[in-house]
Amino acid sequence: MAVFVRLKSPGGVDQLELVSADLPPPGRGEIRLQQTAIGVNSIDIYQRKGLYALPPERIPGVEAVGVIAALGPEVTGLEVGDRIAYAGAPVGAYASERNLPAWRCVKLPAGIPDEAVASAFVKGITADMLLNRVFPVGGGTTILVHSAAGGLGQLLTRWASVTGAIVIGTVGSQAKAEIARAAGASHVIIGRDADFAAAIADVTAGRGVDVAYDGVGGTTLQKTLGCVRPFGVVASIGQSAGPIPSVDVHDLGPRRSLMLARPSVMAHMNDADAYRRSAERVLAAITDGVLQVGGTAYSLQDAARAQADLEAGRTTGALYLRP
Image 1 (tube, rainbow, N blue to C red):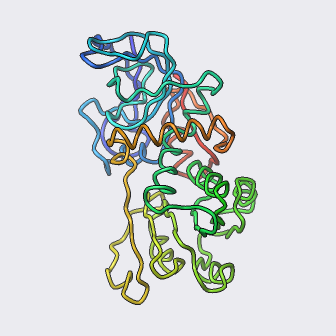
Image 2 (image 1 turned 120 degrees about the horizontal axis):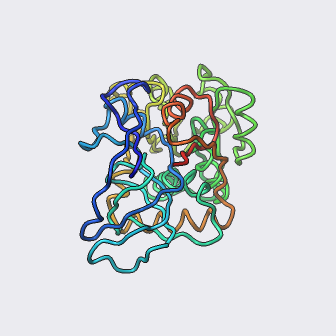
């Protein structure tokens, strides 16, 4: 019998409940996965709040690692006992076991721990999308990463700095500033109420950054527009501090000549080829030690506490659940 975390109705963490049920056999093109580590992401919170609709089963979560327990008809290239990771739709990762489309499965190298992959897979794919698809980042690029001590923020900072990019990070405390610097940030701005534009103008001699990544939302997006050079890119990738306000097109140009992106990692992962390419690069980066992010473990039954801690900013690095 499988154990699941189910959403009773959109709202707070009190709406998450633990339930159990028997799973049907895997269908055509599916596998049964016995899960060992489940990633916790901001998108899970958006699902809980009703910002993103859940399937009828109302089980959140978009990534996990596990061992294949059974194969459905017409599954090729996989075997019972294979250790795999997956990310993306269909949503429903908060479970001890589940059925999953076989094409989502990515075999894992023997040397990578389950927890390391669960802590970095979706975030790593997001970072790959942002650094390669949204705006090509490399040597000489200057980037702004908000929440640089968070799970995604650390991965973006590490990966970008390895390419030779100059990373400016923002954090909420001195302790988090040290984490951002350890991840490779060249400059760190402390305080959510800081004048980001002025600080970045000082660092860049008035030029601004080439690309800025904002997963904070709220009032931060409007402030971020003043941090980017003409013809640069602002990527809005989340709203941990509240809904993203409407942006007047005149705030983008013509004087500023900015490009505003609202990329979705779920849409990126629905492209099978893009998903495979990103997954391969992420696993290679983990193997090579490029992507390193500390993971905090919670039990599956403590999923509500994990989400509450993530939402309140009480954590650094990544979170994952143990079934």
